[in-house]
Length: 425
Ligand SMILES: Cc1cc2nc3c(=O)[nH]c(=O)nc-3n(C[C@H](O)[C@H](O)[C@H](O)COP(=O)(O)OP(=O)(O)OC[C@H]3O[C@@H](n4cnc5c(N)ncnc54)[C@H](O)[C@@H]3O)c2cc1C
Image 1 (tube, protein in one colour):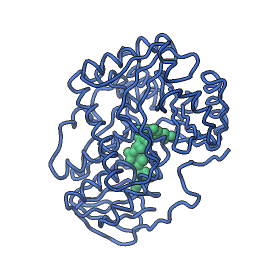
Image 2 (cartoon, protein in one colour):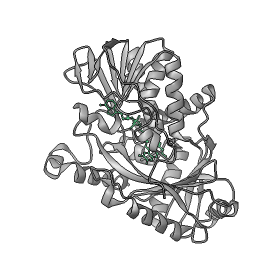
Image 3 (cartoon, rainbow, N blue to C red):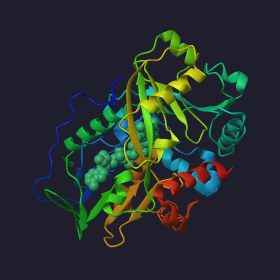
Image 4 (spheres, rainbow, N blue to C red):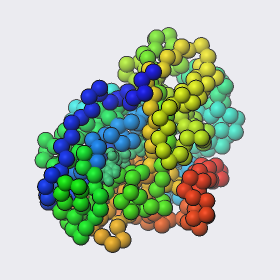
């Protein structure tokens, strides 16, 4: 088994660090989906942009992800409505949808080769309770707010997925899967072609009035957009409100057609379940099974678990339980950190001492990250602000600052996520 990211090439990209002082209209920090999209929107508006990335573009969560492009990510629509009310919940959903549409449009306009797979999404219940309180509620919420969705009970579900021990699902269209590393690299290259100055291997270390410092030089800019997801606290941004959750992803050797048909008798789907520590899977263009999941023991761990043996065993158990007749040989497995807030919706803010520094993170999803990038760009160009309060780091979370001060981030985020996903029912 390769302990490497399946999407990464054997030779990781060469980087060109910043070695002088430089100035531009905007400095963007972070070269993932969010930072690249921010730069993309700014360049479309005719601004000059410098982007600094500590490793290489796509090195973070964006290039390690499973590439499900759906507005759900960590939260379903019903969670948003339960936690934020109908109007604001729908506004957040539309926000994520705008990110999804931007990714789709960019792939088509730039002709990006990133294993674009149009696949419907299926939220699966692994228990009767998951069906009643996750799947059915999600279906009702979608229909009530005017979105398409189909409900499958235990029996009808068999027509679209050959899984055992499942209790129903809700399916909807308009979603797709991608190789998100290939997407980031292609967008990075296109931005460079359009004049964005990109410095990889360049870590932003601190802010100064009118600029951002890196070990090799300062980027002076009247506006700074920081989109470093889980790493915002490293720069003193939203330190109490942003943390990380670890997940594992495995990619199998190409499956036989008969095994793919045993999993998906009809169309190929992108699937995840209603569990708090949920699993997710889809079939790539090469016919490989991509399967991911988290475990409580490693999910809130502050450091990367380098030996994924336990995760591999747990993913194997999941397959044996639900698809006992399918032969799956894992080829690649890797861990990754997802930046999260305590209610799993993103964080947007402005530096208290340097008001030209805007930041966004804890995206918990590629479409959300793309939407955040666009949002910060439009804050700079058009003073966009309609979600500032809703996504503020100072908003009310299920677990507040005082409890967090006693129990620490790990416990507080775990409890807060459980409350966000389950108590709102
Ligand atoms: C294993 C895994 C599977 C996932 N699967 C999915 C999925 O299927 N669908 C989905 O929607 N989402 C998925 N996600 C979540 C999704 O990948 C992230 O929410 C999203 O990519 C975040 O994008 P970003 O640009 O905000 O962050 P990142 O991609 O992490 O980009 C931030 C960048 O900032 C850089 N950086 C950090 N600090 C500094 C600094 N001081 N100076 C300069 N640069 C800095 C980092 O190196 C990094 O490249 C997954 C995540 C993981 C880890």
